[in-house]
Image 1 (cartoon, rainbow, N blue to C red):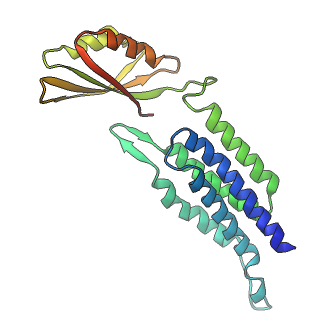
Image 2 (cartoon, rainbow, N blue to C red; image 1 turned 45 degrees about the horizontal axis):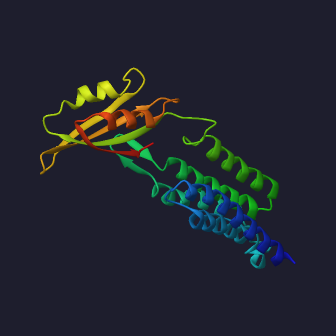
Image 3 (tube, rainbow, N blue to C red; image 1 turned 180 degrees about the vertical axis):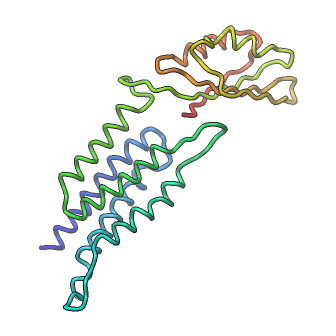
Length: 222
């Protein structure tokens, strides 16, 4: 009977991890369903082993501390979490996914410890935070960093064009770089910090109207 309960805990932990991973994968993040599911499953399994795996050696002279493996799990997840954090130029991405992996470990440990309500509540809370506070959500628009790549002719005054197309009183230029291309063009990379309520489509539309600009490419960095 105990084994069936343990199997149910592992299955429930895996499901909770899969739910968090689905949200991450749906937003094209590095760690998705498989990663979060395995993290939750493994942490739950280790917690079960920590609590029940050594009962056969208990005796008058043998004492066990079930919390030691749980502490080791929290430490070990740091290596995996660090692997999904990337630094590009002046921006850092992957922090939310890394934090989600850390939370998934806690959910798996809680499920393995038999704290079902807390584990499920934590899963729903993590999903709620990631969904409602994601920068692309309609309810909340957080400030974001966008990388704009422009291909222009070499005699173009790019700064003047940017000043005409972008409201610099609301949008901040974080960095600016230019590289000469062999076909007589310049590749300009501009990192823009957009405020909470500002449509990137407006900038793209204005840049596309400029005759000096050959191509426009936008990549989200935040």
